[in-house]
Structure formats: structure tokens, C-alpha cells
Length: 82
Image (cartoon, rainbow, N blue to C red; front, top):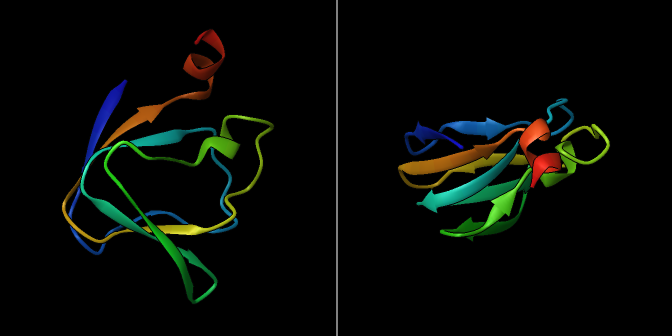
């Protein structure tokens, strides 16, 4: 899996976008937003964006890095091989 790095404050995914990638948080923390409302946070070892790998659904929330972040990306084709 590919490793990505993000600075604090960077948007990882945006609500409504289309994508086929899921993300594993290797280190750091993210904020989950639905519209302008914060609905939660995720930390190390959490996964987000998995609906993109299943059925090509639009993103249901925006995810923003709260801290410096290292993510592992799981592509759709890899998801189905696993």
C-alpha cells in the first residue's frame, strides 16, 4: 500500500467527491465533518473512505488532518484482492 503524508489542516477527502480509495491512519489524527458540523475524530489504526471501495459511492463526509498525518492508501483493485 502506498504511504501518503499530510500536514495539519490539509483536507484529505471532501464530502460528495467520487473516489475508489480507502485510507488507514498509520499515525496522526483526523477530523470528520458533515457539512460544517464536526461529527467525530479518528486516530491511529482507524480506516476511513471504505465506501469508495464498495460500490463507487460519493464521499459521505469531509476528512481533515488535525495533526501531521501518515496514511496508507488501499486502492479498489487491492481491496478486492484482499
